[in-house]
Image 1 (cartoon, rainbow, N blue to C red):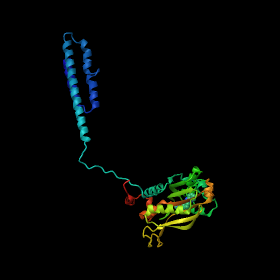
Image 2: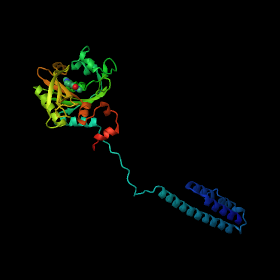
Image 3: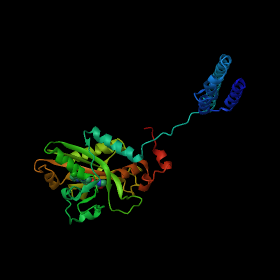
Length: 345
Ligand code: 2NL
């Protein structure tokens, strides 16, 4: 019986040396110290041992179990220490390494120009409104004095979803919606930035999708001189304090009279160059007095109210301001181009 106990101990201690992780250690504990362990079996057989031998054998089993228990605890501590040392080694941080530099983002030149234009008009008391890119024929054309058979629709051909739904060709529909929501309150003083669409061939100066900012003012007694004053203020804030502004007669179905608006050439100052095609002037936007039909249809009686409106292409302004010669550069997201305009946000 006592040799059995010694065999058990030898086997158990041998097995303990092979234990390499917590799971194996727990398995060992169940196997050699648990209820079904060889030692427990010996204890159960104690009844068949001669009575005078019993105390000695029982004591031998107990001492053996104590030694196994102690060995298990020692092995457990050794294992814990080994695992900790392994973690400390694998998770070591070298505080002398240089930090990882995080790439800094910057605003896209189009976004910068949009925010700059918005800031200028906010400073003049305008509010900003945004609206849907999918519009109705009614709001994109009809309410802007562009009936179905009007020849000016050709210049603003667009992408149709149905006969009555289309991708807007300008942000004017949102200005009409703003008037309808404000009616009959004045002044209406709003700018509407956003993406618009035209059925155009893409080239260096045209894109089938581009950004526009339109402005609208409606009140009693609004005159063309108010339009010129606001646009002069804008041109000077955007292109420099000495900017001269020139209005040339033009035509839009939704304004009467209508004008193209020029500033002194940003490239040559008016002397004549390639950018201004030797005219000394550069067109930056279109504008005019809101057509009486448009006012009436939006609920502002044209005999009492008048207004002016203007619209500019954001890409065109950005290209002039930053000397970008091809509109497609603005959409390709080539970092070599974008980095040239990066400023801390
Ligand atoms: C351009 C010219 C223009 C307008 C837009 C407008 C809006 C309403 C009523 C009347 Cl609700 N007019 N907008 C007026 C004149 C010109 O845009 O060249 N845009 C890129």
